Length: 110
Image (tube, rainbow, N blue to C red; front, side):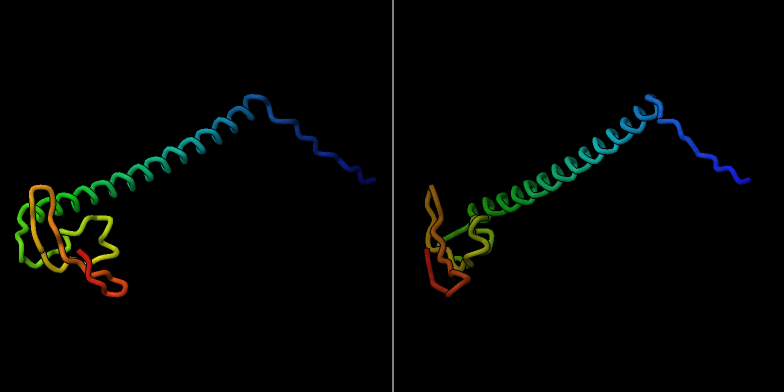
């Protein structure tokens, strides 16, 4: 006669389940740390780029003279995507007047 044997497995011990949950926690925590490091690196690189562009703006501003052809550096960072600098109209103690053209429509502004 054929007898069937049931395979009975014992439930995992508390030390085994603790080890599994500990490993899962370590993996999740490690992933979070890596993502935070990547995010911080991206933010830092953007700030470094903005600082370099601002430094170029200040250098261009100091050397600008009325009548000069304007460079892209004379455009403030927030306006780079909307305007193109054409000429320096005048410079004073507190600012620099630059003739600019809009990228959309080509209207002249200063």
